[in-house]
Image 1 (cartoon, rainbow, N blue to C red):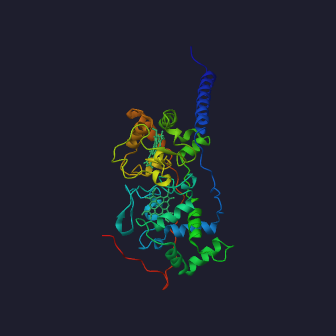
Image 2: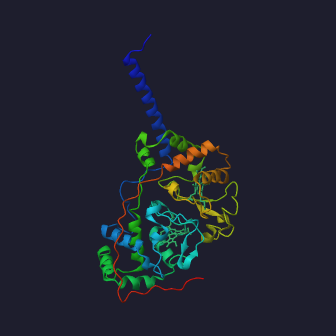
Image 3: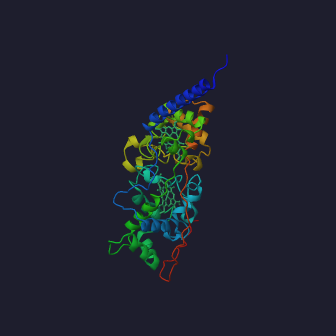
Length: 349
Ligand code: HEC
Ligand code: HEC
């Protein structure tokens, strides 16, 4: 007996429908945990975002003269050409000093509920004031930053255009707000967003398996929301403490912020967007391979033994979080003048 063409086509259509129904079911399930990136720049509290402010923030982000030595810009450690981080175990800053923690990406950081591995800054504007003053990063002072900016007429004009209602707009607060406005534009839509928005073909079979495993084995209980993390605090080593190479005893995480014993070795669940391009991993930056990082998470946070195959599927899913970085045109910065404070050369031996 041969099947008629109509029957065959009908069967194919039915399989197609069944697959679509299954995809929709998984999508609805996933949407209980995750949210796609918005398609436009998000609004920011107390900081209206304008094109002028974005451009000013971009100049500041790339300007090494915001550091005391004139060497380090935000982009030194959050290089937009390499995933918004520096791909070093821990960052190198002022006077070639090695900082204590790995540099997280600035991409999509606007969606984190708090900034830093321990969440000590509530938002990006507050965050931006930190590195400028940190001795191991840019080692500068707010006064010196303002003196530097005021020495270049072009910067004064840009501040005036960005904060038109203010008499004296060149302030450290506005410096931070402009950087926040620029960072709000650093959003990277990924295949996972396309899939959440209804494009069944955006994820491969392996990635879909990985997504299911990511949710079913419990990763999504900590890594959820728009950034698949960045919104909650948990002990690193909830079930089983990783070794001191990965979780150095000296860095007690959120304990330094809250001084509560319960917060010893508590860290923010890391945002996982672009994770495949931001090795090495963890706040100590001691793990270079994403499969290994997934394996460590499974045992330390869930007490789960995942097979190599399962780890591979989860990693494949994590790769679907690598998004498209907005085009970055390198800004031409205002030229310094006779009044611009000179780089300070104190080198740490
Ligand atoms: C010397 C390297 C270095 C420089 C320069 C630097 N950062 Fe960072 N940045 C880091 C490190 C390391 C961390 C993590 C520190 C921590 O959690 O304690 C960090 C954290 C951040 C975060 C938090 C991201 C998250 O997921 O929590 C943002 C945003 C950020 N930096 C933006 C900036 C901006 C803006 C500048 C310039 C004003 C800047 N950084 C300059 C190394 C640097
Ligand atoms: C109980 C909460 C919790 C669970 C469950 C959990 N994580 Fe994490 N995850 C964290 C915390 C906290 C960190 C930050 C660790 C640190 O301080 O270095 C983290 C970090 C990571 C990192 C490194 C991020 C970076 O930027 O270096 C990856 C990758 C990761 N998790 C993936 C997973 C996967 C995959 C699973 C499931 C197998 C999972 N996590 C389960 C809380 C959790």
